[in-house]
Amino acid sequence: MILECSQCGSRYEVPDSAIGPDGRTVRCANCKHSWFQSGTPLEQPTPAPVAAPVVSAPAPQPAADPAPLPPPSLVRAPEPVPDYDPFDAPAPPRRSGLRWTIAALVALVSVVLGAAALLYWKAPQVLTQLGLPIGANTALVFSEKNVALQARADGSKLFIVSGKVLNDTGAAQHVPDIRIQLLDAERREVYSWRITPPIRTLEPQNAFDFNGAKVDVPSGARSVKLSFVSELDG
Image 1 (spheres, rainbow, N blue to C red):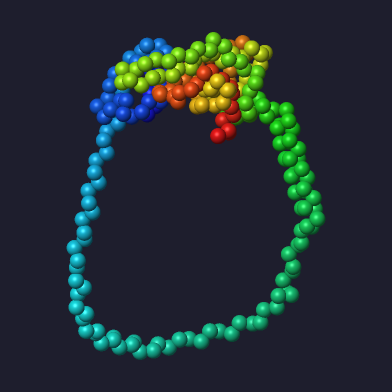
Image 2: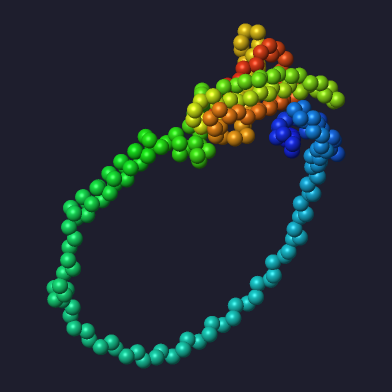
């Protein structure tokens, strides 16, 4: 189950058993806002299908005598039509196939050259405005990183990673997804998850806060690594 704070937008992934079918009051670890979270209703058993009653087929009825055919009617013979000579009508004018082929090739080349120019000069700006991924961005930096581990009332532990993403350049930058990796003492990955940023385009010299939390992460983590990953990567 995914919980989202209505005040600061922080999201938390918790098991359904932590909330229960009757729901419970939860509190945001980031801004301390509390609200009542409704639970997941229990599934109702599916009723057994009712067998359709067996209906016996009706007894066959004796075939009726075929109706008598109507008497034949007299049909008037068609009038004779003079023979048609196709060479009497003038042939339609023929179009020059070479002229139309050259015009189609010129139009196709113009479209291809225009598209290539647009992709070369305007592709990053157009993709950023449309919110489309253009790969992981290394111009953005993380700041004010913070890691916390909080014990919950039900005995589970909430692992929280927060911080800021800063655009210290002079141009707007596309914001990819944020990847959080927990590493052991030998810098091997123990657990990882991704955070979807609240915005996809960050203006120059601006920043935004991010917050990611998981319940009962695997033990053995000794450090946290933050990185950007393209939305197209699995």
